[in-house]
Image (cartoon, rainbow, N blue to C red; front, side, top):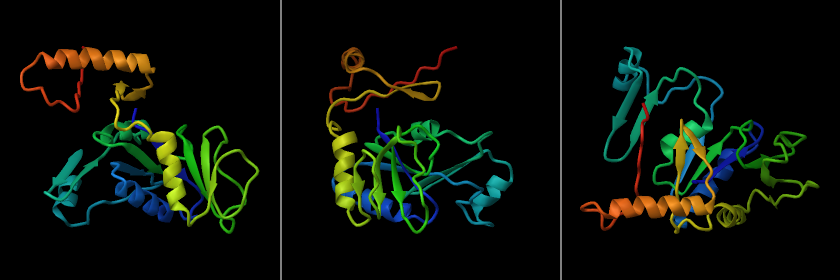
Length: 215
């Protein structure tokens, strides 16, 4: 399973600044990172009057724009998508998914705390795995200063990215990623790779992706 970590904290506590440093260092170490940012209200990715905005306003449920440099998809969901559902959409080929926000989701959380902004920690201690803070708390999680991005990255790698070079299986049923025990993963890998090896032009397979739609 691709790990998902949420960076949470009060407004103006410095989450984005910390994330910039963390993502830059993870990229320097060769990891592929997907970032999902939660927004409380409406927002626009394209500019009013531009082609994508006009075609969206005309009634398109999905508008995609692509170039050799980047691809963007604008979709109008019937209801807000869950973090798990968005992760499924963006995780292909990634080593880790980092979200900013989603403080009510049950994902591991690194909270960014600044004493001049808030007087308490927002996260439930069951989900809290680390703190980025300007003061010490009497809780049993690693605590990092705002200028120690290197240690935050080393913590993330040690805890969530120790085996990215080994084979891995992601099983998603009805849009929900499911955890699998190591022996189940091994069984999937051996069975599927054995079947694929019997097909033509599969000698150098590095990734196998299967989607089954049941009636």
